[in-house]
Length: 186
Ligand code: PNS
Image 1 (cartoon, rainbow, N blue to C red):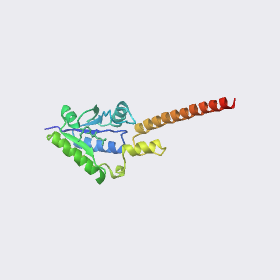
Image 2 (image 1 turned 60 degrees about the vertical axis):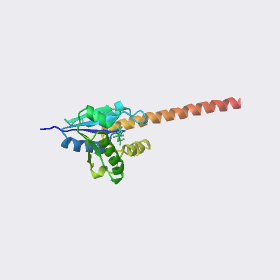
Image 3 (image 1 turned 45 degrees about the vertical axis):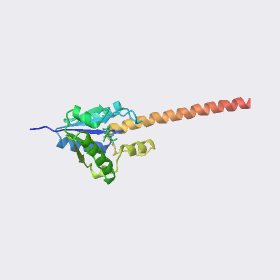
């Protein structure tokens, strides 16, 4: 019997419970699923590719037929390289549809043998995106129930480091300002 392998490409910056939901659904219908993180030098991501890979590997450790990998260049070229027949993408709402349709049709034009398969995550994740998770976390909001535990931990670490850096910078500014003030007084 023919085995069907699919890739699930994306930025995953960071991975969310919505991604995990889709991975779980994909792992049930495909024989093999490769979660493929795009190495995009043009974007300025919050997490390094290595961090994202670690998080996704931890999140998917329980799925025997799911692998995590990274790629650059065209998604269709990567899919061919790993001998996948399908590209899995999630659609949360109508707003995703236009972009996803455009991408699926371009990928079909580039490589007609590949099929894009769309799946819907659970409704409770229909508003969830990596961008919003980053924003809420950076502004001190709760991201509980939005991301897996490992991602929550990594986000908190990142934000603590950024906070310490900011506090350090303020301290440096304050110290040099008060030095200037003291000099003036003298
Ligand atoms: O999670 P994202 O950011 O929505 O994922 C977008 C991704 C990585 C699937 C898309 O940008 C992509 O496929 N990039 C690789 C370059 C490519 O193949 N471009 C043509 C797509 S039609």
